[in-house]
Amino acid sequence: MSSPEATPEATPEAAPDVSADVVTDVITDVVVVMGVAGTGKTTIGPLVAAELGVPYAEGDDFHPAANIAKMSAGTPLDDDDRGPWLDAIGAWAHGRSGRGGVVSSSALKRVYRDRLRAAALGSTLGRTSGSTPGTPGAPGLVFLHLTGDRALIEARMAGRKGHFMPTALLDSQFATLEPLGRDEAGVAVDVSGTPEEIAGRAVAALRARTAPVPVGL
Image 1 (tube, rainbow, N blue to C red):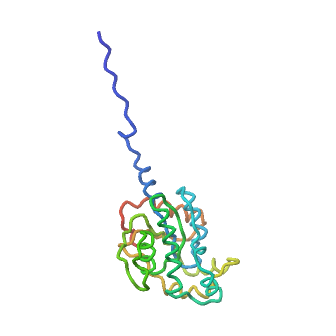
Image 2: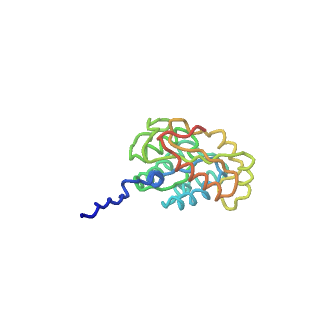
C-alpha cells in the first residue's frame, strides 16, 4: 500500500505578517517632527528614529548662521529667512527617499510644509514665498506634530540650557502655528509625560496610519 501523500508545509507567503508590513511602510517614510519651540523635537526625534531604525537629522543644524543670530537676539524669522532652511531640510528628505529618516522642523505654517514637500520631491515648486505646490499627499513625507499645553511647553523652554530660542518668541510661534490639515499626511501627539512615553505614543501613531491622509487633530 502506498504511503499517504505528504501535506505541503505552509510558506511564509501563505501567512503574511501584517504588522511587519505596517512597520516597513513607516520606516520608508521620512518623518518630519514639527511643533513650536519647547515641544521636545530635538529630544523626541532621535528616540523615534531609533525605534524605527532610521537616521535622525537635527533641523536646527540646517539654519544658516544669520538665522541663528537673529533668533538669539529675540527677533522672529520671516519667510525670506525660512526659505533656504526649509529647502535644505527638504533636500535631506529627498536624499532619504524610499529609505526613511526622521528630521526636526518647526514647520508651523501650511506654506512651510508645502515647501518641504516640494523640496522632498526634488521639485522647484514652492521656492517662491507664499506659493502652494499642491502636493499635500506627497509620498514618503509624513509630519509628526508634537502638541500640548502652553504652560507646560513654556516651563520646558525655560529649563533648557544653551539653546538660541528664548521663551519670548513662544508667543509668535503659537500665533504662527497652523495645525495639520485633513489632507496632510501626519499625526498629532501630546507632549505630556516622559520623553520615552511621548516617543512611544508617536511611534504607535505612525505605525497605526493606514491611509495617506492624517488623523484629524
